[in-house]
Image (cartoon, rainbow, N blue to C red; front, side, top):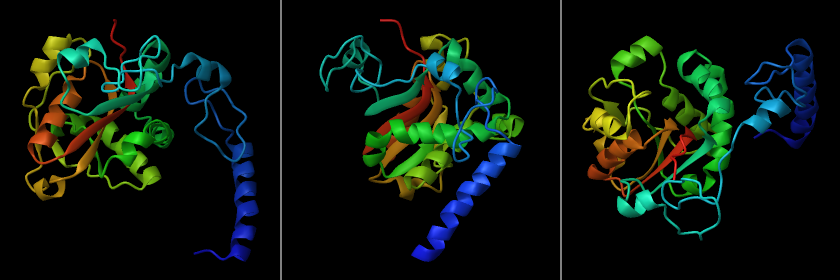
Length: 257
């Protein structure tokens, strides 16, 4: 542990270093690239205009899937979809609404090598997911098939999970789940087609089963669209011994009422 004297010296040195870095490499908005005023080396900033465009999600919402409500219905209120067909997961929450304003930022992270966004997104997940983190033992990302991982070179969900784990102190098991067959890209598939596409696509890593028994899992993904992917992952986790599965995503598509 650093002594109080050393700490008192290190703090101003760190502040001065951040100011120097800001002068040489000024912080830029993550979305539009405009230089932003950020004290203390905050490189994960958004300019006021981009911040206002993004829709950060909160309450009121469905107690299970997190679908936003137009008005407060009570802490345990469920949406019609969750009443009709309860999901395999316990709760799902997301940071952002996936829409025109957030799409380019998320796709840049997912497909354009903007992996430097992971620490900022991890901080957003940590802030939104405090309740879910408190009820979880392990953080597990949604996996990519090896062929897609080879082409992309990184799993965006694993980057989010690792960033979240570093901030929360929760252990991360990036290979607990595997995607045993390559599925079609789901961008233009409807709800039923998505369900068929991912049915049976996920499995537990054959050497990780003992780590799952009796654990509460926080499943992390980049975007929830219909919930087909996280639902199938949750089924595998529960079947193999997880006692609870919550889901935390960077963004979600808001389904029309």
